Length: 313
Image (cartoon, rainbow, N blue to C red; front, side, top):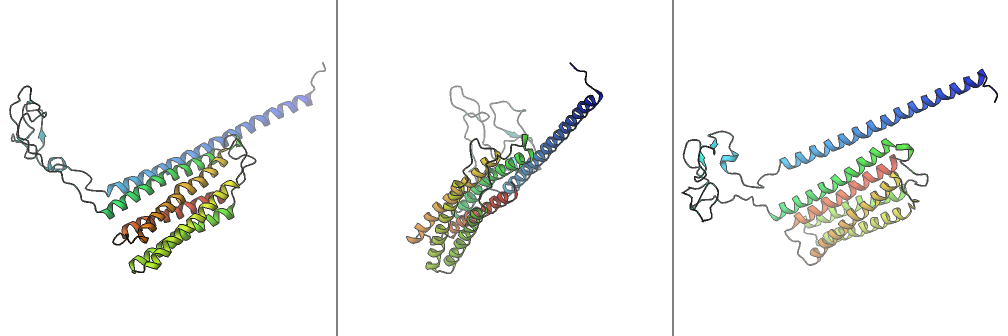
């Protein structure tokens, strides 16, 4: 075997150095993508937590608190200074006014701990009286918050995988971007349906029944057209198996908007229209308002989906 010459040794050394530099650069890129994805996920989680805390802090009257528990000043309640056969007493030695009067324990008779066979005077629970309108509004808001949490989790996962781009496998060669024209038409349809429903609701305030029926019917018809558009956009994807992250999320975005949002909007709108046709919507404007909130939420998610499709490839 011929001996390797100096020029060959120099070439081998140069190739080895180039490989090490390329590996170092690729490792730095991967670490940077990991960092960006992690920061995005943490910021999004913090935003969701802040919104949930902000929303729940305003709720009141969901349960009953005795005055002793709700008080921030005054005598403390000492439980350890008295035997089990007595009722709970205040720190001043007398029985607590809201927790009944105790007596001696009788063996064999059912007794509540701390108040044996006595005539316990339990205060009536103070319940907050929610009207039907409040109940419908709260239920709709919780429904939107639940769906928004799921949608936000999907979008953050999509952005994280896009930033990660492990082994350059985020998007497969055969996974083309969904039709922007189809997505734009679906988005415009969702916005138009929400606007039509809002216009029809105005007829309820103006005692204009034809306008009320026309607006709700138009919102349902446009939502059905948008639903067909989503199905056509999904059918045109035709991604080859196995799907990569991009193809999986695009298909999931389209199907979720179609069935979770538009189908729910059509069914709710149909129920509202049925009550209108049977003259059973009088005095129930809160139903129209809550349904309108859902239609606008459908429009918002359609806009977000279109932005993701147009900006991330």
